[in-house]
Length: 416
Image 1 (cartoon, helix red, strand yellow):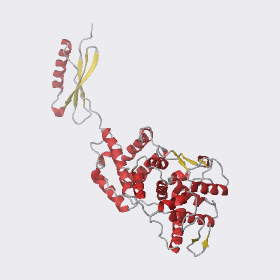
Image 2 (tube, one colour):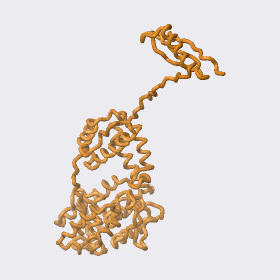
Image 3 (cartoon, helix red, strand yellow):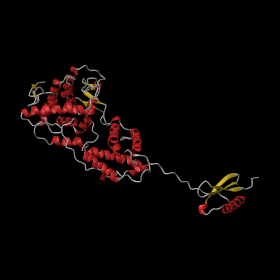
Image 4 (cartoon, helix red, strand yellow):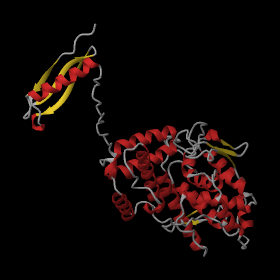
C-alpha cells in the first residue's frame, strides 16, 4: 500500500522577499513545487491552502507535475579569430574542388589570406558584431593601402564571405554581411605581358648568361632558370621546387610535381633549345638526383622574390641596354616570371601545336588564357613565327644571336 500524501510549506527567507514552495510526496516520489514570493502576494496561509488542494488531487490520482518550460542558456558567439581558425582546419580536410582537402599550396594561400589580411581587422570581433559597414571599410582600407591587386582584394573578401556563410549555416548569425557582388571591387582585366619576338627572348637569355659570368656562385643557374621558365612554361614555384630526378634529358621530359592544381601535375616535353641549355648547366655543376635544380649554394629553396629582383629584373635591365644599342625595341614593361610562362604558350603556337596540347603542357584547367594567346598569335602577319621556330630549334636568330655581346650599365661589354 502506497504511503499517504503528506507535505509541508517551505519558506525561503534568505532573499529580500520570502519565497514560498511546497514539498510533498506523490505517487511514491518526493516532489517540490515553487509557488512565488511575498511580493507576488503569497503568504504562509495561502501556501497552506494550495498544499491541501494538491494533496487532495494526489489522493484522487489527478495531480500532475507542472510542465516546466526548458530555457536554454544563450549560445555563446565566438570571435572571428576562433571561428575562422576552426573553419580553416575543416577546409584543409574537406576543402578543394573535389572536397578531399586542400593541397599544401592551397592551404598556404588560404592561411596567408586569413592570417595576413582578415585577422588583423576582424580577429577580436564576435561574428555577430561584424556589419556590412565593417566589410566596406575593410575593402576601402585595402584599396588605399595599394599593396594588393583588385583580384587579390576580392579573394580576401570571398574568403571572408565563405567563413561568415558557414556561421550563418551554424545559426550563429542571421545574415552574411560579406555576401553579394556589391561587396567586391569591379574586376579589372589584367594587362598580361609575354615575349613574342625571337630577338627579345635571345636578348633576355643572353643578359642572364652575363649575370652568370659576373656571379661568384651557382654558375650557369640564372640563364638556365630563365630558359626553363621560357621554354617549359613552369610557374616560378614549380621551377624552384624542381629536382634533377624529375629532369630526364635522355627522353627530353620534365615531370612537374609541385603544382598548385591537379592539372598542374604534368610531364612537359623539353624543346630542343631548352635541352641544350640544361645540358650546358648540368655540365657546370655536381648534379645530385635528389638535389634542387635551382637551389641555393646550401641546397635549399630559393625565394621567388629573390629571383624576380636579382635575376629577372637585372637581366631585363641588361637586355634593354643591348637592344637600345642595336636600335631595337626594348622588352615589354612589367615582365614577371609568369610572363615567361606565357611566352612558352606563344612559342608552342608558333610551332603549330594545338590549343589542347598547349593547355596540357601549361597545366591549365581552363582554356581562357590559352585561347587569348592563341588568338593574338594567329593574328600575326610579321613573319615572327619563322624566327621563333628557329630559336626554339636551337639555331642562331636574325639580329640577336645567343653569343652576342651585352653592353653592361658600367660601359663594360662581356660575351657569353
